Length: 243
Image 1 (cartoon, rainbow, N blue to C red):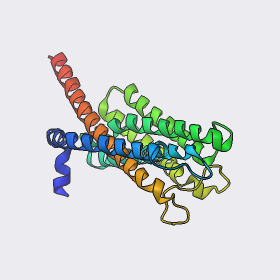
Image 2 (cartoon, rainbow, N blue to C red; image 1 turned 45 degrees about the vertical axis):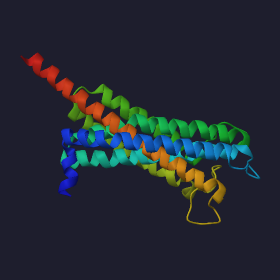
Image 3 (cartoon, one colour; image 1 turned 90 degrees about the vertical axis):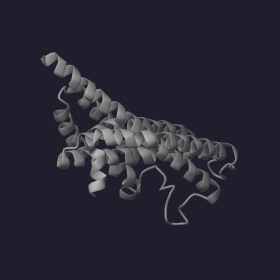
Image 4 (cartoon, helix red, strand yellow; image 1 turned 120 degrees about the vertical axis):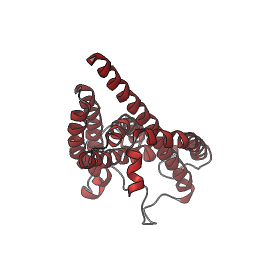
């Protein structure tokens, strides 16, 4: 555990992520290129959904990361509350715009899929509604960071907001289990072989999911580095102003 907390040191964090970023970025691009080309061009049409089924290669990984990005922010916020490590608070802040974009992609691709399948672009389905609320929490989280000048106060308040928003992150994941009457289909990824997608769609979907995960990690590392440097710059400017 002692070695884990070493990375709370901003200098150590930047040096380590500088070494990892090129490899993670290349792996992300490779997985996304292979997964999306494989999924969109080399898989058959579904016997019920036709070509619209291929939206899963964007929708499912984006929805997965939209939820898990918030959960990552929750863990980082709890670390900040308990240990007061600034890197964790800045990592949570860095992850928010990435998670918001993932949520927006999931909402947009869901609407594109829902129009031919349900006959409407939007329905107040439990999972869709909880996802929309999650997106609004992302926007509120980012706005709160920008509205407060003191970084430590902003980190405290956004951590509390993150705790509240985690309820909707969990609802987004399990809404179809809580409310069976919703329009949204069951989980595409399940341990139950009868509910899981066919292997011909499953394997490229796994590659796409790996690509989205690696992309998220790369973007969070890069944005956290930027946040650390921006915090240093603000501290230097404030110090010079004091003199």
